[in-house]
Amino acid sequence: RAKDPPLPPPPRHSSLSLDQFCQRYTSEDNRSFEDILEQTNEKVRERRDALYKRVLSLQGPKPSSSKSAGTTLVAVAEGVEGMRGERGG
Image (cartoon, helix red, strand yellow):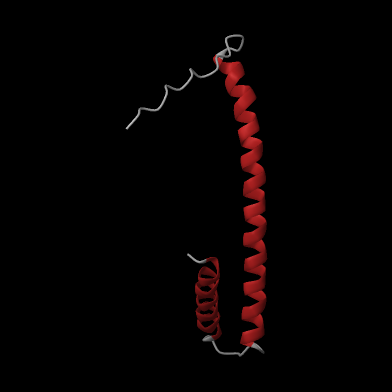
């Protein structure tokens, strides 16, 4: 089996100090990460809102007993499990 050719050396940015390099490239990474994080958070908010509306629709009129909180928690737990199945994870 033939060996892979050696990789070329990484590019050198000799004109940049370490602080300048980190400032330039880290800020780009942070912006990308913030964009991805915001998109993910928006999806979580949408799923949470849909789940909350579903729980309210299943719950119907609010009973006066203290057992309603337990019913809501069970419905939320079942809804979360259903969401996990939709994601495939």
